[in-house]
Length: 491
Image (cartoon, rainbow, N blue to C red; front, side, top):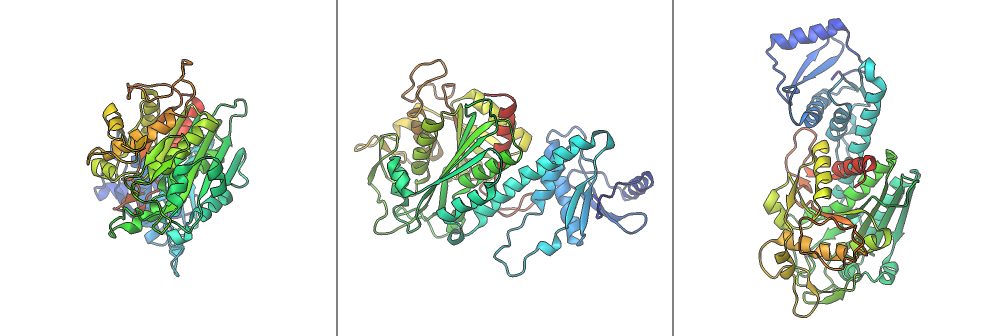
């Protein structure tokens, strides 16, 4: 990486660099950075290590290396940066854009002055056009994650359901083949969304429901992918009040919604040849005289009655209505919900992995492949009949939590699945499918469904490479990559 604009290195400059780092014993260890001056003493150069050529996670190695190099150059206040040819131009672009992220819009002295005014990629002559396209794609992927970071980092008084919906309309306005619909409480009432209405009842901030329709494949009416994101813009826990410690993080409880709308932004900017739908039920979970109480019962959009045994298990309540609506209206081949859903998932997998529940081996394979391409780690979790039996209520069709102090993430997934399968009219073989099948880990009936619990990856607690402390915006790039792969080979 060179602290200069469009600075392709001459053979003599390359020799100078190799001689210099060789004399100092620089071994090229993955993620390492060595700063030096060019032979004419006019340019700062960051030599970054990529490790062994056969590294399994080569793209992530490139992201981290470029991120580290960019940050070192920025610390020396360079005004422009050129990135030399890398094994992956897309990964290099992502590393650069993600590394330079900062959330300082509420600071009186922003840090923008420390960022370079331009970052350019110096491609190999033989594949200049291809690498330029890859670099631009990487920028779009990273910008999407950074937007999700912004949405999640913004405090709740500046990110109400109405403001979130407005931001989505503004960001996606003018993008080709995109339609954005924003609905209010009256519409939710007409749609029989008893769950969304129940959770929103305690807040003075009016609910919103965002629906994004992207039609990149005009030759087909089929929706290949639907994404449903949890949109709780602040979560006190309601009457099942959360502890005060770390409650500030609940401004990011709409992380599922943030990553879903950000992924749609990237999908539309890249004009992927695929039809995708996204929905986000938006509200706050607050306490007031009108708030839902423990033991209250509501009727969901699916017609199932639910006893609320914990008001802090509100995400699954609003997602249930959103899933039912999305599947019934759009009949997607695959539907994925994304939510900061359970503390149990944080205990199980920490902040590194996203927990994935899906009965479909085919959909899991696609998610796993997208995970490897984006280096957003995922781990498949089990579905089982036992989780369903734990959701029984003596006074309603379902309880919103399990009746035992165990398997919290699993029972949450089991709860959600009722609203997907009860929405589905037909299985792939044409048979009517009205109940949850007994085989919970090998079911390919439509729509194929997956639940992504991102409670762990929601926040980064360490800063390294392109990762920052604070709201992470993950797994936005995984969602974009999944759509990219489905656009090339349908599920």
